[in-house]
Length: 425
Image 1: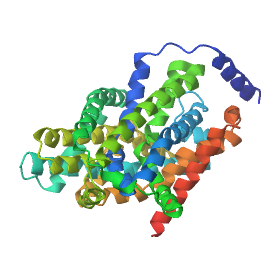
Image 2 (image 1 turned 180 degrees about the vertical axis):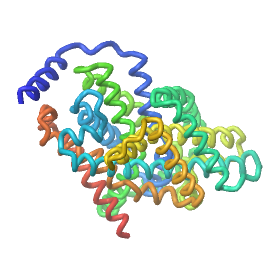
Image 3 (image 1 turned 30 degrees about the horizontal axis):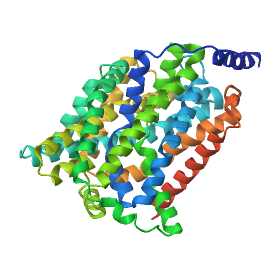
């Protein structure tokens, strides 16, 4: 008990100590978080959100920053509340016991791994569409194309976590420029698009229904919870008692960058394409970038858009692999097996390769996977578990009584109910 009291006291002392100046290390993580979040979800967001009409999309845009920032900050604080070097699965076991640790480890894996499957399908479709429509080359058999692409990404993974984060942060620079260029490029092509649905206010019941069902897609589009555990562990190693303050700063800047860039891009897309065209993109099971490339005869947009999609999906795959592999390794260890670290890495990579390859070959609906697979679990782990821990874990009691906690719980419950409703339809 004294140890817990001392821990809380040290945290308050740390809060009064000025945090070190912003460093390259912080910038790398800020861009790494951005890179993990911006992927298939973001590239499909204009399609799903645009189909719902203007007013639900505007409401989602206004809630985007608080919805994502407060939830990811809560999860980061939860990981930071554990002992030095403990990842999310170990922190759960430390606070809630071994049985809960085993359960959360399994849920953590099954929340993240389906996202890798989504990226595998999206990447294969993006490259296949680019070869066929832009390069006018007959794509190789889907099974072969998927195998080569996934194997190439796993080769990058073999270079280690730090290399992945650095690689993603480097990829973000050209990606931000390209995404901004594309959004600006579309401005002359704005024809009103979604504004056709803004002339009359929707019925309150219809608005709430559309808004309610769109929240899970927004949550997924900005989700980067798989890398939060590694992020928090590294911040604690780097900043010690000041890790919470610096982590919040990094998250705030990363989420600000995400919301500004993504929502500008989304509105540029939905002002260019009609709801009917967005529905056509959903039917074709391709990202908004691939649809734009096929829609315009301009050679610049035709080549740039698929390349942006490829970079976005590839770097998000890498970021989510960190979390998925962390969860799978935790499951293996909790079965009683104790393979050597290198053997465990190889086993994890082999399992990921086989399952991702099979699903990418089968080509299920990407938006359907986004709306159903892993959605309820992601919501529970990202929104609800950290808020529960605030009231149960002494090290997190200092965060109790905040209005942001109520907001996060409400969004989590609403998102969970929407996902359950979608699954029952």
